[in-house]
Image (cartoon, rainbow, N blue to C red):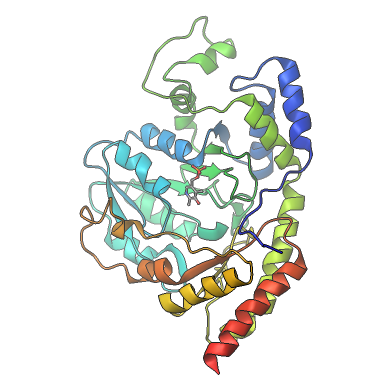
Length: 379
Ligand SMILES: *Cc1c(COP(=O)(O)O)cnc(C)c1O
């Protein structure tokens, strides 16, 4: 039987809530289900203010507008990340300065980051890779020292924690994704988290095409109009209805994923003990939200062979980012610094299937194929 890399899980409640949204006749943005989702996330994770968006990319675009990014501003982020971490800031005219990853983790190297700060640095964007926390105390201290904003790219980090503080609640702003490949999904979808009062009013305006429509609907102004720049960043309530069903099953989904993650770790740790692969190294200060299970192979050749071996056994495994500093779009804009750790993850990191409905027999099958591959090449 074919094992796909990902399979979005539907709780069964999605269609029920969507039907109710349809019956209400109100399917634009900020309807009943959007409000339910906002309250859910604000209550569960003590976020100051949440705004659903149509994607994490959109939430990051809102952040770039909110922080008044303009020509010449510098924004520091890891190179080993998705294009959506960078594009929103490029669109506002920023210069992206890429940081290397840690030797033992794809997350940004804080010591490398310190050296990249200049008078022009306006924002740091830590990416919590695989839902594992960056060292946020360190990052916030550096940022506060230099008057720099922090936007957490928490796309993969729902229900994860840094020293018991929810990821997404620490930076000035944070962006989450509900894309079908994430833990909690709505097909496409995302949210902006605002942790500072100063940004709340303007965020609502930017999300509503630069109008003060949200204030109008709360009865705070008697007519609404164009007051700032903005775009249409809010999802339909049909999408929010879908997402709310997922929210209600969030703990169930998370427990299932953690069981799978732990099974992988137990079955594959003998390969790490023999130094044949590196397994994910969870920082001591981080929780594990089981967003992803990955291996770091020794080199590109072994990774390519392993992907093929898994494929021959009807298992889909995939590599991840081509580090952005070496992408065809950015290559010539990069300042030329070597980012060896980012390059290493580009060439050697391999992601294994992980989704709620993946059963433990399949995990065993996948791990057997991997173990046999290494037995073959190391004997
Ligand atoms: C998935 C992802 C995004 C983009 O999320 P969308 O909701 O698809 O826009 C951004 N950054 C990271 C790190 C991601 O994993």
